[in-house]
Image (cartoon, rainbow, N blue to C red):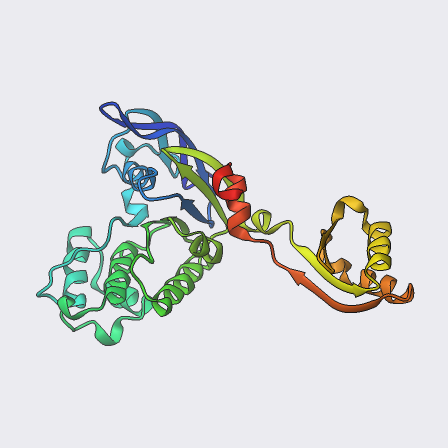
Length: 299
């Protein structure tokens, strides 16, 4: 079975300006894949090429094994660069217009309004909607065709914390139901909470690809104990000198989280008084900057 998204050496140039360069991207079925990068990195251009809104300069792309000319949009829902609807129509009426153009039954309109939690405000005029409601209506429109692939450009852009949390919950629910989600974002924190895997694009190039689990690797065990010299000696004997970093009267020890009990027992048995034993999550932003080779910021 073909992957929902596959690109090979995908490139887009505008004159001498390169928007996307030699992009090789694969998104497996059922995954929430984050396309992470700063504004202007080439994220939206890539998504537009996948939807046939922009033609590549070179390279190739396939969605469910098909090229754009073969037709695959019936399996794809998308929200690119923000939703746009008729302001004088209600949310329900706007979706019915779109359903008519897409050849979708009206019963599907009611279903997607329930999915995005807009059923109670469905008859209100679009112009009265908050930004969060507009984003949810845009997502409802993307879901009208019951797509297998959902392509979203900055889906939480402009939302308040509650709206962002609601959007994250909804996307994870869709993924659990078998929908593959490809979303772009410039926010590491957003990608961390939604995505299974993500790729980093900078200046049109995919410079790194990893999972959140891999990015989280490298946490440390914070140990504060006395006498300090004896504590250090025993820590070194337990895990090796390279894994023990002194920080004043405390130590940051690079071990797996499950090692905390063993280390505590060994120190207490050796007569060392342990005052603090705490697992410290890694600095995801620091790890991320190191991952993309941003030495200026990582330093």
